[in-house]
Length: 261
Image (cartoon, rainbow, N blue to C red; front, side):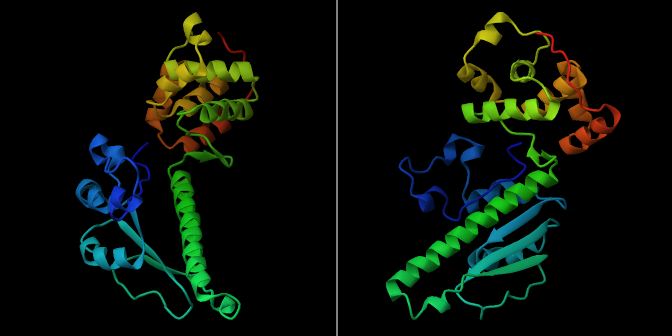
C-alpha cells in the first residue's frame, strides 16, 4: 500500500523546484517534506517500523528526537574521502558512511570538474541506495515471490501488461486467459460483462489504479480457480502475499486452468 514505504525530502517541493510549486495541499501522497514526516508519520511510528535518514544534517537534526521512538533507525551519509568515519551514536542501530573518493583523479581533473564529479557520484550513490531500500522494503512486506514483484499497482499501460505477464508466467496461462483473470480482479466479478471485456486498456487502468492487490488476486483466481471473494478472503487472512503463495504452492501446485469468461 501507499504506507509500505515512503520518502521525504528536506525542503519538500521548494527543494525540488518544480513548475507547479507546493502541491502538499492536494492530499497525503503530496506531503513529501521532512516537516510533513514530523507531523504526519512521526507520531505513528512503532517498533516494527524502520526510519532511514540520508545525510549528515538529518542525522544531527533527529538524533535526539528519535531516541524516544521505539522504531528501528539507520542513517547513511556521504563523504568525499575515506578520512571521515561514521559518527558515534547510541540512538541509531546502523550508521553507514558512503565514501565518494575522487582523490585519485586530483592530478588529472581540473578543480571545477572535480566538484561536478563529486556531486554526480553522490547523486548516483543516493539513487542506488534508495532503489535498494525500496526493493528491500517490498521483499520484507512480502510483495516479491520467485524474484518477481507480484504486487504491482496497475496504474498505467506498461504496468497493465506487466501484470498480465506476471499472471501468465506464474500460472502458465495464455495471454487471453491471463487478461481475463486480471480483469476479474480489477472489476471484482466472477463473470465479466461484454462491456468490461471490450473496454479499452485505459478504462481498465482508471478502475485498477484506485485498488490494491489487483495482481495477487488475479494470480489466485488463475491458480486456484476460486471466486474473487474467496481470493480476497485469503489475502485478508494472510496479508503477506509471498507467504500466502508459498503455502498454496505446497498445497495446490500451480497448474493451467480453464478460465470461465
